[in-house]
Image 1: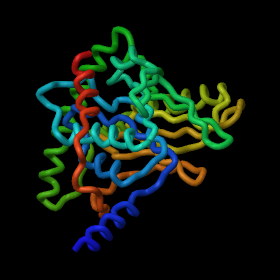
Image 2 (image 1 turned 60 degrees about the vertical axis):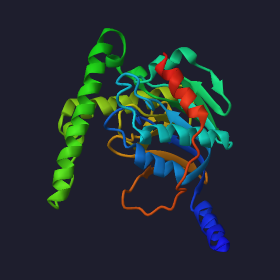
Image 3 (image 1 turned 90 degrees about the vertical axis):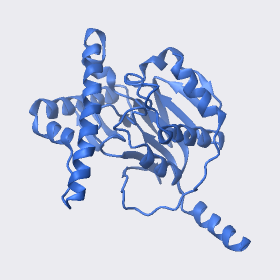
Image 4 (image 1 turned 135 degrees about the horizontal axis):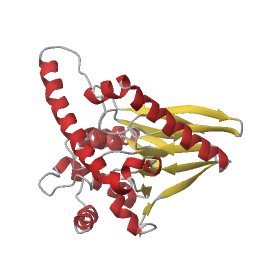
Amino acid sequence: MFKCNFHLCIIKMNLKRTLDVVVISDVHLGTYGCHAKELLTYLKSIQPQKLILNGDIIDIWNFSKRYFPKSHMNVLRRIMKMANNGVEVIYITGNHDDMLRKYTDLEFGNLKLVDKYVLDLEDKKAWVFHGDIFDSTTNGSAKFIAKLGGKGYDLLILINRFVNWCLEKAGKEKMSFSKKVKDSVKKAVSWINNFETIAAELAIEKGFDYVLCGHIHKQQSRIVTTEKGSVHYLNSGDWVENLTALEYSNSSWSIYQFNQNRSLIVEEVDNETEYASDLLSKILAL
């Protein structure tokens, strides 16, 4: 009996994929749209040397003490456990967690809080930041409107989930309201293209090989070339609609997309850490 359990433990350990760097963004913990359970499954399946949280991990804009499920807390616990086990965790602030920016460069063991980050990858350099700096609606007087839009987006996702539950019961294909809006509205498509172009051009001017962003909830990997040079633009997407992450291994980047039907054997029990609870308490006190 003991040998069987030991063998199962080895199988579980071997199923973890070893990666150099993992980048996730736009998780929006504390909102109805967050796919915390799926993210937790993903985090349990990997063993990165460095985990970069590229903004909007905790949605402080829409945060409520009335809604922060156990599954959301478990994501924080998993991240803290990874940090405690030697994974370097870089938390880059975004617009939905911009209140943390007054604590920039604060360190908790292996976890560091920053506004932007330069990642050394062998003989190349990657510039990592959330990307809200390019969005005028998240700054100044328009910020209030952006916050209202965030609440409306969360409500849209909640309604979308109910509709998809009905469609699934009827044996029909699921649909995404927000994706249909983004894909059909020319202004939204143009804004995304402009965002990517501006980020890439700025990275080229600064001499970076890669530029990594989040914010727009659209995963991407493409080479952008201008008269001044070229750069590899990457976007980690989100864990509200697309359930994606960026992974760096064997000297190359790839986009990971969570598959609900993918079979993964993961640890069944996580020891709760006071560290995660302390971190959440400090956020609530801001």
